[in-house]
Length: 326
Ligand code: CP
Image 1: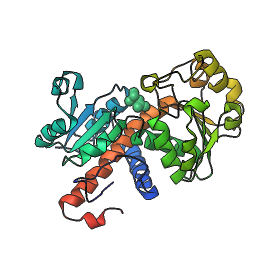
Image 2 (image 1 turned 90 degrees about the vertical axis):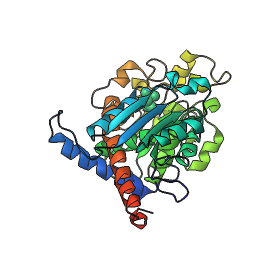
Image 3 (image 1 turned 60 degrees about the vertical axis):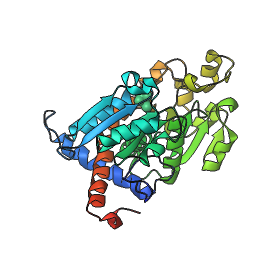
Image 4 (image 1 turned 135 degrees about the vertical axis):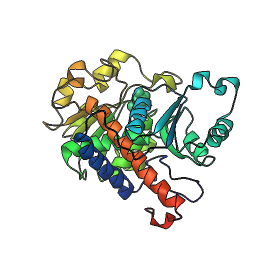
């Protein structure tokens, strides 16, 4: 979260995130949740009072953008949602020129979602703000992985070691899958990924996960089944014979879920396509589906991320970088 060649503390991905960095965010989220439980909704934290957060989303978003905005406002920050469609990006301004322009306005945090892998890192090298990756292409979506793991910890206990977590669906095009794989394996979980061969590149095996091409076998004895949507906007070519066949072999139905542990959690980062990757009865299964809880935990986890980064920014400003976690 801090590197000497990047001006400010950042959150760019889970690939390079140490376990203790993730644990620090979870602990901060627990503290925020405890404090939040004792507050009326009209009361706000003041941790980011006087700070400015810019949301810079070059791709559509419902959950991520809104929850970053709510998280920042609950911490007392001023939030600017840049409308990329009506900004000078439409006149051909490059990402780096946009970065230089925003940098001149001296925001404290920049949350970026961009279709190109690596765009947040490029930005982070150019601005004084702390850059948070809200999703870059098929590469990473680290805050989604952190909120997913935080949600799992609430139900399965803080230690996810040896928990069997199945990630099913369009692994090839999924940044959520990559960030979750890198984080969950670092937390000691046993991750299984399952998809048709066209959507599950063999090289995913190098990340310490077990590859499955049979949904029923993958789900056997699982603690968590996380479903992913087909990312049609990223597909170039034909990856599936038909949608109905996809659901038949790789969709999550009651019958398939019955192979998991009796209390296995059903998760989905959203947006969800009912009847394509998940049956409605499973998506809404009381006591098992935590899909809405994931959204709630998204706000808490993003508050924790802002809080941890704000603390790191204070240490850097006071020339106390050596106190930052290695
Ligand atoms: N999970 C997620 O990234 O959702 P949005 O695309 O709605 O932000």
